[in-house]
Length: 338
Ligand SMILES: [Zn+2]
Ligand SMILES: [Zn+2]
Image (tube, rainbow, N blue to C red; front, side, top):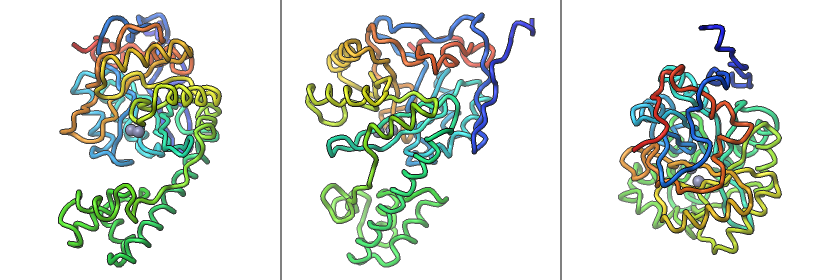
């Protein structure tokens, strides 16, 4: 029997030694459906965060939670970093889950912050290496400006204090400064920190210099990845403007859109599905999970409606997702969550 299982490139190299799950031949039944049926939930979550960015769980704990919730396929998509992928990959192999390396890129379009999920089946490689370095520097510069402003407003050594709150050496974000403000007794709580110092329009609300969406999509595509427009219904755009965003994204080489992101209104989802079909875009789904206790647990998205938009795992670059047989990997054989 063993000779039936011919492995396709089980390990792909990257500067960080990112490893993929072993890939198995098409002879075995697909775990994932080739089309979206009636309103269904699937054991797939392609948008989640860990402590490598602003999530609460370590990559290992996140994988354990996903396995416990019956997921068979997951992507780790931390903000502008793939630092957590190596650890998640090891945990996924142990748990018998199929893991797609990825990240969520911060970009700009018409002055609006737009997120692009990069699904990187080959790991971190190509122009993405420099792209993520550029994102890291943008975050570091922003943190320096936030710190300068907070120092002028009465929080001395703001950068060191935020660093102490963050632990590790990831770039600092506003939540780290909020924790520092609370720890120093400048404000009573997190909400106060945002209300007075860090929230929209306040001094500490410093905009980072993110790349244009077309540039970021270019990194993904040129690095063997699949670019997915993240949560299109969460930018507060009109239908027409959202359509323009999708057009720009496609012109740059973007291939998929998150049809379902966490909990969504079913009518809005169906309308979005129509827009994807019109443009021949692939449909992805993800919870955008950050921390336990929030409404968006891994795999807990709204149902996916019946649509002619193909699932993102039908994209040739993600064929290993579609064909990874859960039996061999030890995951649950079900492809739908009830
Ligand atoms: Zn996002
Ligand atoms: Zn996210």
